[in-house]
Image (cartoon, rainbow, N blue to C red):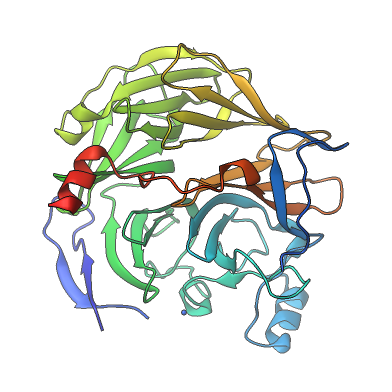
Length: 378
């Protein structure tokens, strides 16, 4: 059993960690969607499709009971964030009535023609009967996998539990660290910054004109004021040493230097970069400096090459989508872009796509800077 570090005092995020016992879990078709009646732009392979998503239940009796008592309503399943590690893909699901588990995994390929079901991660026990139990997974938002194969999970607050950051060892599926934020942080998404001097997470908040910075080595978190903007999405460009931030309920894109965040500054003044054609809700950057962005109630994904003056380029569009969050995005360690598409009005309602043009190896991990690579080589 490996050790589990817990921040013991949620009112004091700088309190030292304690060590306690840890907790113990074909392709449907290869369709080229680059040019079709529904999708234009990027060259994607379709990995899976589903008319309806379902869980891997302990038994059919458990599923039947959940359907009958309303604790499972498959029509309410909505992917929010994804992360990919090896042969597994992780999904966070919007916490609605009838969603018994908000963190799930599925394989990135299948030996049969059937699309896989969702497996609660790390186990059913970590999700069921979570009300009033702060050790359970309640509502997962942001997901990231770091360069050494750990899954970082934002577990949002409930009426009686503060927001927590959970870090899982994906070799064992056990929790390595829990950080309890000192207050009820209304947080959204986050990015990981791995450097020679430590690993940090930069976490966007729903209002308040500040972000949260977390230090892994110290198991501490603190807020950094960002005057003038309320962040809703974040992306990290290691080539430019910039954290890009989307402004809530706005089309504006801002940036702040990550050097100030690493050094413990408590205020960082954002610089306006430009304006998108929509309101961004999810952003990420690849190792070549391309920033991908999805928008609220827009049926397309856009990009910007951050080494060039700001200019939005349409990357992928799916006709007929009309929902607040139709796409989720993630990059795997090879730099391949994975996308989920949610179509509220047509079947299949859910699709998992993989960018065929990007399935080539790149040297760097998305969250590992040149400083991080120097540390690894030492």
